[in-house]
Amino acid sequence: MNLWPWILLACILAFATKLLGYLVPARLMGNPRMAAVAGTLTIGLLASLTVVNTLATGQALVLDARLGALAAAAAALWLRAPFLVVVLCGAAAAAGLRLLGWG
Amino acid sequence: MSFLSSPAARVGLSISLATGLYGISFGALSVAAGLDFWQTQVLSLLLFSGGSQFAFVGIIAGGGTGAAAMGAAALLGIRNGVYGMQLNALLRPRGWRKVVSAHVTIDESTATSTGQTDTREQRIGFWVAGGGVFVLWNVFTAAGALLGNALGDPRQWGLDGAAVAAFLGLLWPRIRARQAAGIAVLCALATVLAVPVLPPGIPILVAALVAGLIGWFRHRPATAGMEPDVEPYAHREKP
Image (tube, rainbow over all chains, first blue to last red; front, side, top):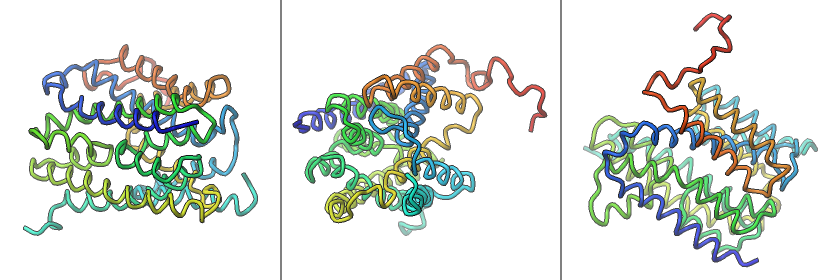
């Protein structure tokens, strides 16, 4: 499968979306319904991405070392660790669990 | 005034380093998913939005189509449009600055800028974080893509675990309020239910639809909207 057309289209759409934001008159930002949708959409997307990256392998739901990464990241966030430390905890947990032979 | 005496510049630099290093993970995962070096680099140079990039290569890695990957990447990029609206009102860039600002409008530059109270600091934060992440993210994407094959399976190094942690890290500060946490749980549940029955990438769109509908119908004036209709823990003492 040639991915180039999809990659370039994704790049164009990403930039167009960003630029569109800058072309919206500032006064429209006051619309509470649009602000609410923007807020919930971001939460929903990030929650869904977290789940997909933790559990999904294709169309299968799999419990493996990534679950350990999620737990380690949550613990790090609970302890108010900086972003970089959180990411490293996730990587270390997944790598460590695989080293022990799980997932 | 020296550059480093600006608080926004310091925050911007540390965020640039943290996020930039994470580009190694993207580069390695991308070539492991089957993209070649230049496809990987073009995503970091031109698409330049971590969440969208990981979604794109994640869907390809999971056996999804290019169309599904593009759709999820585009949908995840919608929040950058929202950031653009906020930053346009905040920083008021003109002419070519508007175009460059748009390109480096991402989670990190928006967060660094809007976290400042002084107008000058808001500008410094935006450009240091936006420019810094752009440079380092691209350098480390190249490193990850080149090392990727030498490193073998990126899962062995826990790089898929790094992706999980990063998305949770981006979600975490947004779900302090109970209603926000409820939306996250509902969307996570919708995703789990959708994964086995829909093609890869589509479950994220299902969650987005659920989230969008909640936002559309639940919007209330500021504080009132953050309280649930039914108090599920009414028997407990309020903190």
